[in-house]
Each structure stands twice: as C-alpha cells, then as structure tokens.
Image 1 (cartoon, rainbow, N blue to C red):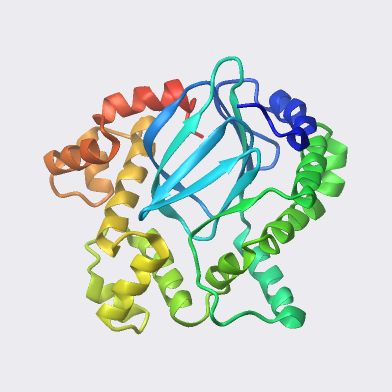
Image 2: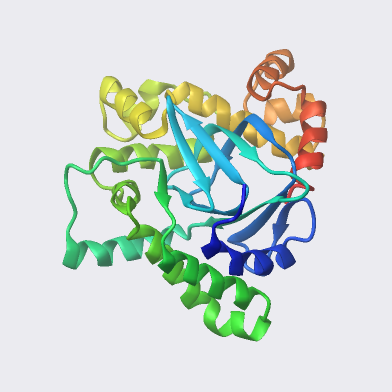
Length: 301
C-alpha cells in the first residue's frame, strides 16, 4: 500500500526515530513508533487510551462485530483500555510505520471541560471505546511538528508540552471526538463504568465479581452489565480475564518469574488453567508467545 501524499513528509522523520523492528521509544514517554515488516492476522491487543497514527502500511481492529481502520487515511482513537483483535499489512519494502500516542488523562479531562463550556455536548452522543476517524491536515501538521521537535532536544524542551497539548485537542475535536469526550468526561452511567475500569485495573488479580463491581459504582447488575458491554465490547468477566492475560504476557516477556509464579500474581489459582486460557487467547503457549513478541514487537519496554 502506498503512503498517502500528506503523510510523506512524516515518513522520513518517523523512520529516523524508528531504526529497529518493533516498538521504538522516543524522548517523550507518551510517544512510541512502531516499525513492522510482517503481515499479522488475528492478534489480541490491549491499547491504552490515546491514538494510533499509521503513516505507512495499514491496520484493522476488530471488536464486537465492528471493523476499525487505521491507515494513512485514518487514525484510531482509544478512550478506555479495551482488548480487541488486530490485523496489519506491511512488507520489507514498505514497512508499517505507526505513531502510538498515549493520552495524559488529566490533560484530556481539562481540555474536555474547556470544550464543554462554549460548545456544550449532545446528550444523545454515545460513548465509544474505539473510534476510527479520517486523518485531517491539522492533525498531520501537529504530528510533523512534533516529530521534528523529537529530533531536536532544545526545541522539544521548549515546544514539546504545547505540541502535546495541541495533539490532545486536535484528536478531541476530530470528526468523532464527541464519542471520545463522552467516555473521557466520566459523568453519568458511562462515568461509572469508566470508574469501574480503573478499579479493575487496580485489582484485576483479585476475585472481583460482577455484583461487587456494580455495587461499588452504585449500579444495578443488569444496568452495569449492559453498560460495560456497550462501552468495551466485552463482558466484565471477559475483560478481567483479558487484562490478566495481557499483564501476564508482559511479565513473561520481561522474565519476571516462572509461569506458575506469574499465573498466581495475575490472579490464577491454577497454573494449568492459566496455560489453557493463555493458549486460547493468544493461540500460542507462553514461551511461544514470548518468542513471537520479540520477533515482531521487539524487546518489551
């Protein structure tokens, strides 16, 4: 797939920041650049809140029967951490180059509050965990300026905070930014679901139950279950299991202990059950998945 002409000035800047295969760190912890030369199919992923801008190659996300495109013409925005399946297209001749941008949630919330003042918001807008939007010149422009600054430490020190603030703003006022803002606003029923996601993140290795989670945020079990499924595309139990497995995957790749010890740390009482669930989710054993990660994503950071 040929890069979109608007992305061409970005490619050289991004390529120099991503010399190695897999994820490349940058001087800004919230910005990583992925280089991949491999076609991938049906890969489980769990993205942090933020956005992914693909400059070359293409990706598709699959969640709850919907397909989300992110390529040179579209970017993917993520309002809450959500497990989904992903496919990507790339080749050695035209490697996939993608910018991964993690939201500063405090800054995002501040911008949402400011935007609500003069603009208000549509109460009928539905919160969405994933949003695929068409790339617009204003976002390409701030990305180019940000990548340029990443090559120049003095410029980054002076202009970096303002560029990151602008990038947050551009994403939040984008074509489908309203769906993101409903989730980031954390008001009403959606806010309670998002609050419970934070609780799950803190206590995912405990024996959380759906009634307990619903009670913690003051919702009935049916309302909580329906709202959770609508926002994340997963049931609460599916979400907790996926989070445990993704956390374990990182621990294993970082050699944090034996499989049995890691299984226990993420909340599994049975190492055998952990291994079965791991293989079912990732389609590989823990050792096979670690090797796959190093080959396709580089060393975990």
